[in-house]
Structures are given as C-alpha cells and as structure tokens.
Length: 594
Image (tube, rainbow, N blue to C red; front, side):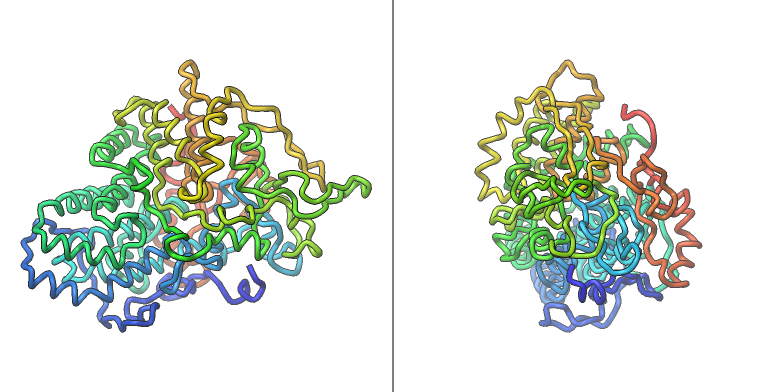
C-alpha cells in the first residue's frame, strides 16, 4: 500500500448509515461506470419474495428489461466488489488489500504484512492481531458497496417480471452477507436486504441470518430450475442480459448460478455441523441433490485472462512489498512436499543477516522463508529500509499474475462433500473419492496455464507421512519452530475419523489459497490445519492470551456515536457475547469435531 493511499483510502463507517468510504455507490448516485443516471427513488420491498411462476408476456418482459438496464449494470459492479473491485472496475490492489490482505489473509495463516504501515511507535499495524478499525472495517465496506449496488434492484417492483434476475441479484447479496456474518458474528442483515438507508440499524443473530439465507437459496434454486419451462423468447431475453452483465460464470448461464446457490448452501451446512448437526446434514444432502459445482467448467470466478486485470495479490506483493509468506504456510507446504512451494512463492530476494551474528549471512535466492505471524514489524516497504521485505513473496511470474479469484472452486465443493461423506451423509460418493478429486483440482494458477501442478500431483498424493521440517528465521532464531504437521497426504482408510478430517481440511486449506475467508472459518470450527502460535496476541484488543487464535473481527461502525448506538442497542445481544476478537461466533463451538 502506497503511503498516500494509506492516508486517503479508509474503511471507516460513516455516522448516519454505517456506510464505508470505500467508494461505494448509493442507489441514487450516478452509476460508477459513468453511463447512466439511476432512478432517484429508493425502493424497499420484499427482496426475498420471488414469484417465479408468474406468467409474463413478451411485451411485459421487454418493458422490464428496458426499465432495469441501469440496475443490471449495477449488478455487474456488485460482482466485481465480491473480490476487490470498485467503481465499476475489475478487482484492484487497493480495495483487495482492505477487504482481504491486511486482515483475514493473515488471520488464516497464509500471509503476513511485513511492515507496520506508518511512522511512530507500533505504527498502524503493530503486528498480526493488532486491532485497527480502518482495516478491520474494510470487508464490511465492500459488503455495503454490494448492498448499495444490488438492493434497489431486488426491491424494485419491476424486477418481478424477470424473476431469474431477481434471484441472481439476491444470491449475490446473500453470498456477501454470509461472508460478512462469518467474519463479524452479526450484521444488520434484514435492514440491508430491505434497502433501509439510515440509522437505526438492527443487528441480527447469526443463526437467524443463516436460516434466512438458506431459505432464500431454496427459493433461488426453485426459481432458476423453473427457468427451463419458460418459452424460448423468454430464455433468449434472460440469456442476453446474462451475456452482458454476468461476469462470474464461465458459460453465462442460469444453470451455473443455480449451482452456486446450492454450493453455497453446502458450504453453510458444513459451518453449522457442530451446533445443529441434523439440520446441517439436511441442508448438505439437499444441496448435493439439487446440483452443486462438479467440474472446473462450472466454477464461478473472476478471470484475469478474460477480463484483462492482474491478480491483486501479485501487485500488493511485488510492487508494494505489502505481503509476504506466512511461516505456518511455509512449514505446512514443506512438510507435505507440496508443489505450491516451488511455483507460488519466491526465495528470499536479498541477503538476510542474523541479528546476533553479523557473519551469519544468507545470500539472496537461497531458500523459501516466511515470517512468523505476530512478530512486531517496523517501518519500510523497501529492502533498504526493512530487511523483512527480503522474505518470500508471491512469485513474480505470469502464472500468479493471472491466477483467478474464485467465488466457488470445484475443489472446495469436493472437500465439502468429502467431509460430509466422512460424517456418513449422502454426498453421492465416498470421502476418499472426493478428497482425491479435490487435490487434483487444487491448482492456484489459471487452469489454461497449468503445467507444473498436474505433472506433480500424483507424486504429491503418494506421500504417506510428512517429511521432517524446521522453520528457520535467518534474522532471529528465537522464532525458529519445528513443523506441527503430523499427517501425510495419501488417503488411508485405517486412519481415525479425526485424522481423516484433518487431511480433508488441510488439503482444502491449501487448495483454497488465497481465498482466506473460508480457510479462517475452517480453522476456527475444526482447529485445522495446525499452525504455529501467533506471537504477541496481546497486541490485539485485550481479549486474547498467548496460544489463542482470533475468533472474529469486532463489529463495524464504532467510529461514531450513532454507529456505536446500534451496536449497543442490538449488536451485543445478537452476538450473544462481548464484541471482542476472542468471542466465538455462533457456529464456532469448542469440543470434539464428531
């Protein structure tokens, strides 16, 4: 992050309406693409009521399509916001950094910010768990941008004449809302879905939000399945809209959106397995039966090669020096001899001198070397100012520059089905079958550019036990640590249920990189993959002790008395506990995984 950007680009939530200054679009603003002035009316209706059996005339459909063009354009903008876009543009490093890279990428153990972003004692990010509201409110700012680009459409009375587009718009909203409630523990879900524009906002309980989203997903599934019975002229009309405004599916089809809805339901089912096991099984089996993502062609993603953008992490790492490999991820990949370690991360870019022995010098390009999460950082985004910039970065190559940003990757769905099958649920196959398919479909680089991983995966999958590995910090050996990985890769039916689950979640975690939200969810609910202790957890909000991991991000909007009044009035009650980093969200309960 450039220093000027750090000063100017904030994610604080403004007083009257919990809005963020992440350049979101108000429903009455000019569309950020610059082409269209929006309807000045703010619509509030029944966003989750979809009359998909409504008889629609061809003239009525054409009138609706004409009236709603501006909202379809905003729907496209909302899709970009899901993975770090803004202002109607494809994902970029500034937004992506605030939504993912400064917070959850580090909480999940993938990456570490190698400097503190500012002058002065501690800087603005003293260490990994340091609470900085500007950064921690960033994900929620993106959600509000999605809400402000989608809520007017799904509440607009005319959208009922094209129910499939209402269903897709609602799915986009719910996808983001589910991400947010997992991060924060509660959000004003009902108020935002109904397009409420000003305080007071009422925070809703996570269990209620989950139930409402799943109810929406069932309606969305029914609506999109009913599309097949529509007349040809209607199908052609909907297809023309998707052809112009759908940027997430590869075939721009209603069927792919339907698979996303069911795959999201499967994801949510697995989150809740420890708090409502029978309901979780029901949701998961219904999702699989209705049809989830099953092939790479059905994956939902924002594709750099198709859209002409560069993966934001590539620029954050290589041009700004703002992110480096986490030592836990290094250790995990090395212990399992994973191909990622060779083609996703670079070796040290410059010499590193040991702090205790000036004669102990590691030359540039010697080895992969991550940073321990929680070490206290210093100022400087260039090696001449900060030696930690020399630690391993995202590889500076075309493969990583063109790595897609996934909304639903087939490997995630396969690992979800593997876990379900392990629990005895009907997932349409065995745990081993889905586990092995998930590993084969795990490559991070663009599938059209994939060469190294497919050639290495068979050998990788044959690893029966981890190799001995010790993380070594060349600068400060007090951070050295033996690997905590005790499992191999090869499936073994003789393993315990717990060991099988650890294998599934560990491989799911590796395959998900760099999508940190779901990986952090799995770490919290299962304890896997095993990680090094985060150092200096006391740098957070005071709720953590050494050995803890952060359980949630404090609720957004604390910067004003108005926002804080909503948190006091309904947020704390909705959480069911204190609003701290150490508070567990609804589905994150201690105890056995089985």
